[in-house]
Structure formats: C-alpha cells, structure tokens
Image (cartoon, rainbow, N blue to C red; front, top):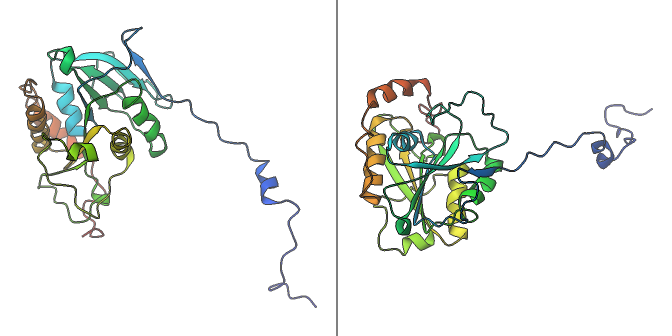
Length: 264
C-alpha cells in the first residue's frame, strides 16, 4: 500500500513557464521626462554647478531663496498633479528646476528641488534626466538626510550630524566641501546614491552631503551656511524666517527606527 505522507506527489499538468502564461504581465510605466518653460531651450544645459535638494531642510532652504527663476519641471507619470498649487509650495509633489538669476551665464547655477517620491526602481531613470543628458554640469552637490536604519551607530535626535561622500574627480579638486566622510559600514540608497553613481560614471565632480536629523532648524541653518560657502553671492537672509513655523510641523513625521538598538 502506498504511503500518502511520503510518496512523491503526481506531476503537474503544466510546467512553471506554462503557468505564467495565464498571468497578465504588469503594465510598464511611462518614462519620466522634463518639461522646460522655454518651448525651445538650447540643450544641453551646461551649468557650472548643479545643486539637488532631496532632504526636507534643503527643500526648505531652496524654497526660501528669493532670486531664482523656474526653468522647468521633471514629470513622473505615476505621481498625480492633484493637490498641487499654482505657485511653487513645499506641500506640492513636484520636481522643479531653477536657475539663479543673479549668476551670469559663464558661472550658471541650477537648483533642483525633489519634492516628489522616487522609488528605487525609478531612481536611475531620474538620475539620467538630471545628469548627463539635457543637463551636463561641471559639478554636482546633492543634499539629503541620513536614514537611521542605514546608519551604523546610535543617532541622537538632539545632535546635529553631517557627512559626505564624493566621486573620484571631486577628491582630486582643490576646492571641496569641508566635512568628514560618511562612516564605513553605513549605507546610502535610493535617489541620492543613484545621482552620485551617475556623477562617478560620467566623471563629473560630485558630492553627496547627508545630514541628521531629518527635521531640525539647526540643519536648516547648516544647509544655508553650506550653500553660502559654496556660492558666496547667494542670498540666504530669508532662510531663517518662519523657522519656528517649520519646526512645529516636523513632529508630524517620525523616524520609526529612532529608538531602535539594532544599529548600535
């Protein structure tokens, strides 16, 4: 008599590849693209400096700068426009590209504020659009926040921390961002990592500046001072305005890994 517990089951009528034929393939998302304010811009743009804001403090600083001109927007087809305002707002899910009007063409500076979510699988597509195709910068500064789940060590919410990663060509330059390197064993992922990798691939001077905590007036002041040091002509007088209002909203978003001892 056959042992029903140990006897091999009968073979399936279908191979695994045949079973997949009954599953509808997922629809591919349309590629992101850039819409410029000028219908016929002279492409590619070749700024001397491209600064990309990803973290909330850097987005706040960018939003507060008075002398900037909207050049265009990066569109993610999967991100809806509903809820966005007519004028640029920190509440919008957008990715706007600005130029600093006070800078001449020979030393043009572009600012990119990434206020929309970019999934890891879409990061490379966005990085190609911002670096190396329509925009070919001489130098790139990326501003992002440290995620405590990726940091090897305990992060205090009361302590301001900043570090950097940079490309090979940036390490050879004479003028660089004066910060300690991101500690070994910690991880950077997502859009910021993809942007820095893009700079390395294209042999562009690139620096990723990461700060902690994610929401803090002290980090806003740090970012403002850092940008002032990189671009001395930058007007950051309005950055410190309404910091209390900004700080009061920061409690709405908390880092779930903040109190974890996993990474100590």
